[in-house]
Every structure is written in C-alpha cells, then in structure tokens.
Length: 245
Image 1 (spheres, rainbow, N blue to C red):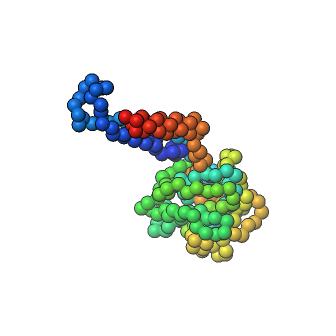
Image 2 (image 1 turned 135 degrees about the horizontal axis):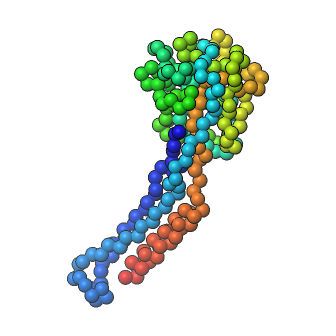
Image 3 (image 1 turned 90 degrees about the vertical axis):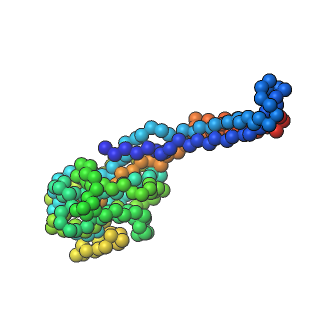
C-alpha cells in the first residue's frame, strides 16, 4: 500500500532577537557581552501518514483489447491531491517488448494536467493489477470533472474491456470522487496520449486501463492555527521587551 504524508514537513520559524545585556541587572558579564534570546515557533500541521486512495480496482488479471485512448471520467466532489499515475499490467508480468504505455490526466476541456510513461526498462511499481509511478509533485484537482486515460495498448500489452467479456472495473468508494462514465478515443484506437477520449457507450466502467493514487487536499487544523497565533504573539511580546531594554 502506498503511503503519503498530508503535509510533508513540520514548519519551524525561529526568530533570534539580539539585545545587549545589562551587567547591573544580570549580575554577570561585562559591557559588550551580547545575549541571544531565541523565540521558536513550531507549527505541525499534520504529521501522520495516511493511506493513499486508489481511483479504481481491476477485476480481471488479463487484458483483452489493443487500443490507444481508453479510460474513465470522474467528478471531484472535494479538492484532492493526485500523487501517482498508473497503468494496467496485463498478467502482471511487466511491460512486454519495446512498446510504451502511458497514463494521462486531463481537465474537462482536454488540456493535460499530468502524464506518466511505462516501458520494459522502467515499468513502475506493481500494486494489485496496476503499475504506478510517482509524480514529481502532487497535482491538486478542484471540484469538477476530469478524465484519466491509458494509451499504447498492443497484442503484447492489452487493456481490458468488459464489453468484450469479464467484469467491469470497481470504482473508488471514496466520497471525494464520483464515477461519471468510461470514454474511449476515435477508431481504430491509435490516438496519441495528448488526445482526450470523448466517445461514450453506456454507463458501465468498462476499461481496466489507467489509474491513480490520491488523497484529500490537506487543510490546516484549527489547533495548529491556534498554536501559530500563540507563537506569533510570543514573538511580538519578546520584541517589545527588547525595545524597552
């Protein structure tokens, strides 16, 4: 299972306030001795690792169709961060031959948000019946419709179309996303991975093709925001005290 941290680091702001020590009041030191006062404000927005959500699950181990440009259209109900894109691996034996498979994530207008390619030499990591590769950085999807499609299928590496037999894909049970339909590209199925499939036949989630891992977009916790406020207040008090000195 892939894990990701909702916020990858603990934010730390350290402000050093330098003030000249007063030997009379401190009882130590000599004129010219400098004392450093350090005010540290630590803000941990979320340190717990959470299991990434998979968009869909393949119910057939072996593909049955050679096509380029098949996938799934889905609706995002609440902002999510996509961390990995995946491609169906027929028979889970890696990418066979010299072919290249690719997974592309599109906006509703057909513009490309992210893509990953999979080859025999760089097949990605197998998770169930899909191979995944991590994006260089999370891609945030706001509320709206998107298409995730797979490309480059051949007789050696085929996707699965349940309209030709077998079981349909199981779409994610997460309330963050909803299934819309399963679009496919123009015949004879040789579209490039920059062309979003738009043709729809029925409402079934037919294709085991492309997949992704995602999480809810992290939101600062109220307790963490309160902690930040207290830290900033302490910093202000320290600076006023320094001015008086």
